[in-house]
Length: 326
Image 1 (spheres, helix red, strand yellow):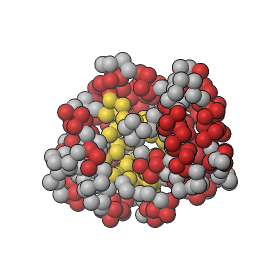
Image 2 (spheres, helix red, strand yellow):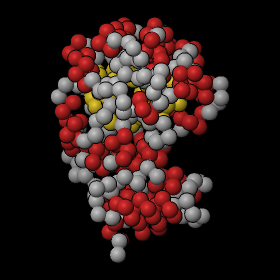
Image 3 (cartoon, helix red, strand yellow):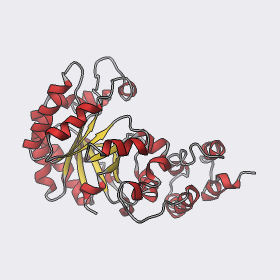
Image 4 (cartoon, one colour):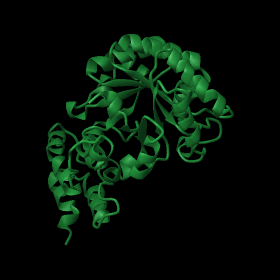
């Protein structure tokens, strides 16, 4: 399947959440949804030698890596590393509002410096070769006029050779709001993002922000090329990804039951523990699998309270299944 089609539905890069174990779990749920890594900073890779941060399992394909940075030369080197690792896409973060990102002069603050972003993606594309480079941005930051800034920013990216972008339909308020508040308080402007698709019909544009159900996904796909889902895909993964292959991608694949999804994770959990990992490093991403179902509270409680115990393994996961509730 072409990456553009996989990008009809994607799971957003989320710090501390979309790690390797999370992505393997999401891949069990959906074979076709495009998955993204947590943001990895270019300095960590190039100066810090933290190549382990971009290691991934081949079963995760199609999978994209998201980079953070603002130095074109450094981002070029980081992109080379990611392409060598085998990623299907390299994405540049121009949307994260965290204090750490601001102090590094990258993330959402780069919305104020489109020429810097253009220089960065030019270097990244040269390093990536045939691997697509994409940009994830906000509709603007602070007191910028989003209806003026966003189309100008997209036009700059297109002129720099970018053909695919993901747009979070909120501003980032870097002055006065915390990163957590920036996920909820700035109002969503879906109409503006939809208008960008009409204004740039030659570009592949995905919408992100506040999309909580599969019904919402279908609504946005009527206007956009793709939909990127964040917290809902994490907290209620089955509702978003369980039948996505059929509903979004038209695949002739019946969804696994929630219990079969758990059983499909047994081998990965076993390998993870055998390599020295802890059970909770995997199961913390699975706590929302039974959201809204009978036995969901017991499932979460057992894995949360006992998953960190010495020797905890898949036996506990099997015991926690709602079907085993007395």
